[in-house]
Every structure is written in structure tokens, then in C-alpha cells.
Length: 394
Ligand code: PLP
Image (cartoon, rainbow, N blue to C red; front, top):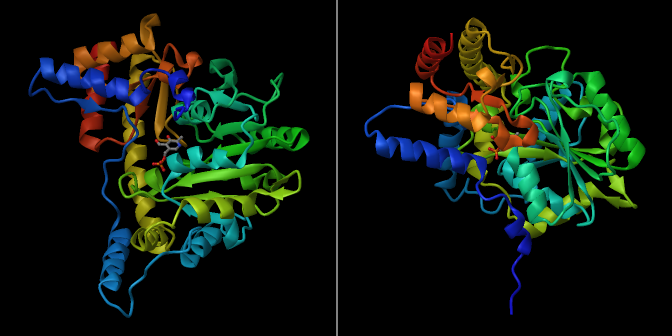
């Protein structure tokens, strides 16, 4: 008889965002017609920028004619997009060959799929608070997981000290949920640690486009030695509003080898087996993000979310609430006031002022007592949420 993957039984009951959806749904059923101010899940509110829309339309027209029609795309990505992304890295002085860039359907898919490269016995280290998919994908794969908690004392940026022996290290910077960003020196310590121990870092750079401080690294490959110990997973979801359109990219350097095996060659083999490439239309839309016009347009969208961040952090300042993030990241991470627990604060905001955030506890035990606001809502909703927070908490 077929034996199921029993690791699913070890997953935590309710995925964080499903829990939030359930509670907000229940509230709306009890209070029909009430409007919620959603600062919870990290989904964007602005539409795709004009450069992307134009490229998508053109690509659709190409697919309508035999002379310009495209069938299957290369599994690892269209050359035009791999080259555009490599060029984008070059602008930050990171030299990549286009064949080190793999086009994907988004970061979530890659965070799960990439585990195929590693032996099941490899233990994973998750720096927490963390995006829940790291733990869940590792649980499904049956991997041992070590949790490295962070807190206010280290600015939610733990360093590689007194660590358990882990072979895979998840790092997210700018961080979801905390908005904390590693400095070059802070990240270099992790790269040096990985090179010294043979571990591989899975670096989630989904929010790199939000970094405005020129001293902070956007890519782990800005650090010396990262190409022999890191894989970088990126997404256009928050950079360019592709949450529902789906496109991302993953960098697996040629220099990354373990036991004489090239992880780049293994990933090519994996993609050519498990995918038939990302749609031509989306890759054309994605390539438009990396044109000068596309870059200017996505930057002005990000500026809208940055203004939302300022509106929310001004309100928190007025209320005397401690927070971090919101400057080089689209998330604000705050201490729940009056010693409230994070789900308790969630319920309080939902029922008192109809503002929805994300309880910190959902990102790991050390997130208890903290709360995350996303800055992706509309400016109007954000202003209203900030006013309501002031009235309730000041
Ligand atoms: N990584 C982090 C840290 C995220 O917060 C998210 C989405 O919220 C993702 C990855 C997923 O991105 P994608 O939409 O590309 O799957």
C-alpha cells in the first residue's frame, strides 16, 4: 500500500496566514458590511507598471502569429531575461554569468524545490523570526531543523556564534517579518562561517529593492567568498508587483560545489527534469522590469510603499511604541504594547479598530510579544489605519 509522506503530520496545524484569514472571516461574518484595514499579509496593492504591461501586450501579440510564436521556453530561463538579470547585478558590481541565473515562478516555489539539491540528512538552521515557508518546507522534506532566535538585543540580526552543526542556513535580508537588514560586515560573518564549515546559505533577497541605504548589501554575492557557499533566491513579487503574475529568479554560482558536484549543474538537471520553463509572456513582462523605464517605474511604486511606512511609523512614534524596520524594508516590526501577546494584540486591533496585522508568534517562538505591519496597503487605508492606531494607543 502507498505510504504517505508522514512528515506532513509534523507540520504545525494552521499556517499563519490561514489563521489570520479565518479570524478576519469570522469577524466579518459577525459584523457584516464592516470594512477592514489590512496591514497583514504582504500582498501589494499597486498594479503592474506601464513598462511591464506594454511588454506583456506585445508578447501576447507575438503569440498570435506563426512567425513570432514561441513554444516551450528553455527550462532554466529565456536567454534575454537571464542576461538582463546578470546585467542588473553587474550594475551593483556583482559579476554573474547568465547561466548562473535561473528564472523561476517565484521565491516560494524555489524555497521548496531547491531542497532537492541537498541530502535529507542535512540539518537546516533557521534564523528566527522567519518566513514560515523555511521551516515548513524543511519539515515536509523530513529535515532536522535548528532554530536560532533573535531579539531586540541583537537588532533581530543574529551572528554565527555558538551554533549547532547545520548544513543549510536560511538568511533573509531585508528580513520578513522584522524589516532588519544585515550590514556587509554582519553578512560577511555568515559567509565566512559557511565557507569554514562547508554549509550552504539559502539567501532570500525577496525585499532587496527596498534597501535605500547605499552601505547595505542587496545581494549576498556582494560579499567576498559568497560564490562558494550561497544560493540567492529573488522575486519580482514585491519589487514589481508580480505577486499574482508570478516571476522570480535564483542564482546558483558556478563556483558552488560540494563533494566534487557542481550545484549549478545539479540545478540545471533538476529544472530540465521538473519544469518546462516559465511562460514566454511572463518572462517578457519580467525583462521589462530591468529596462531603465521599468526600473524608474518600479522605484516610484516602491516610494509609495515607503511613504506608507512613514505614515505608520509616525503613528507608532506618537504612541511611544518600539519598532524596527520600515526604512530599508516594507515591514514594520513592533513590540505589542502593555505586555500583550501577539495574537492578543491581533484580536484587540481587529475588534477595536478593524486594523489587521500579523502576529509575531507566527514567525517563530521568539516573535511572541511582537507584531508585523506590512506597508503594501493603499495610501488611503494606511492613513486611516494610522489614525485609528493613534486614537486607540496614544
Ligand atoms: N520570501 C519571503 C521572505 C517572503 O516574504 C515572500 C512572500 O511574502 C516570499 C519569499 C515569496 O515570494 P513569491 O511571491 O516570489 O513566492
